[in-house]
Image (cartoon, rainbow, N blue to C red; front, top):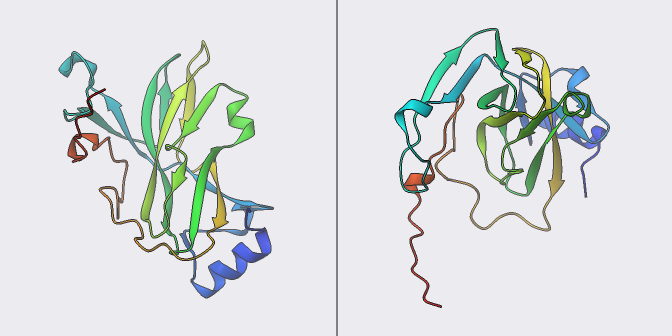
Length: 182
């Protein structure tokens, strides 16, 4: 069940939930809007022949008040807001409808785990046939918070914990190499 605006305000007031910075305009009926920061990562296509799950992905860092995403192109951005999610809360990152109607898809693999602390890296894809200009400080996505039935036994402590800026894929650090014979 999504957490309402009045409950979100109370959680923010008591410090149970941290979203910093936060302003009243960002609190929606069942979500909190987040704004785009000025730090971006673009895939270095000339340094890689193929992306694999075992190899480090190379990115080019861009810092600026705005960025243009060419048609049918992808880049990573981050939120201005720093979050601290309680051990009994998860959040889902959703694109804002007004931005989706322009052809910009926003994702962060969907789920923010209980116990996460840091800024949210966003995967941004321009599905339209014309460039889209993005500006730092604009509301870009929304977080929908849900309460779990009880606190997580193992709150998030993964490879993205504490990220302060846009962070590229760290899939190559996974240790789940299990061979399955069929």
